Image 1 (cartoon, one colour):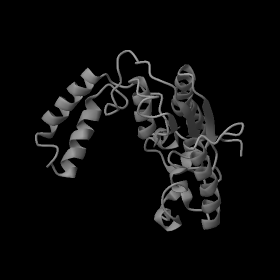
Image 2 (cartoon, helix red, strand yellow; image 1 turned 180 degrees about the vertical axis):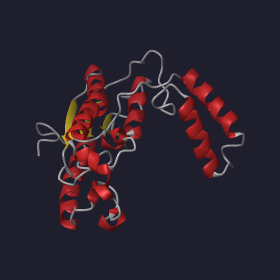
Image 3 (cartoon, rainbow, N blue to C red; image 1 turned 135 degrees about the vertical axis):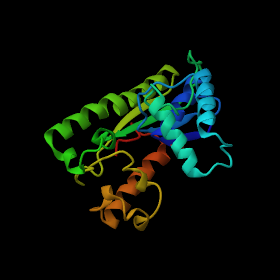
Image 4 (spheres, rainbow, N blue to C red; image 1 turned 90 degrees about the vertical axis):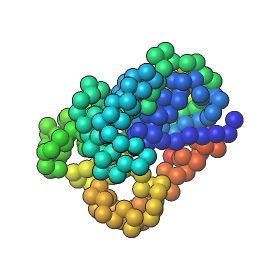
Length: 232
């Protein structure tokens, strides 16, 4: 019972799908899910139909096609689809009951910033309307998705803790944006030196925040729990 899965954004969405298929308590027992979007997932049948449409649009073997061809076919399918995320993982029409799972689910304070920008200049995110729309969309998509993950965990008999990540909020205009916590896990400071959201972050600050976040994730994976995982 020692398997922990972790994912961010599409990865968290995939964990949600695994839970819907009844795999919790079987394939894994704890989950760390960051920025799970509250977006419906296709059924297996509609996923098969999407795959066939993609292959027809691509007009080639996807295993040997040039990456640019794959991206063009993907863009065409996304324009034609009525779904917000047509390439999301498939879920059963009726969720399957699985075993117990403990979940830490999190989102960033400005998680939706990239997605509401919609061609506007970056500075728009620091306007009143930009901050308002970003906040509303963050709560409606990523906050709601995190709450749903927590609900599923509690329904399984497991424990759930929700966390809003505010780190990076002083770095305008991106602030605590989507993916801002990824450098806290992967890569040294120079690996992220060209990332606009981290332009004003010092190596010491990145190290301090990274150490704290990795300690939190490690506590979930090792079931170390004194009060709440995120108490510190």
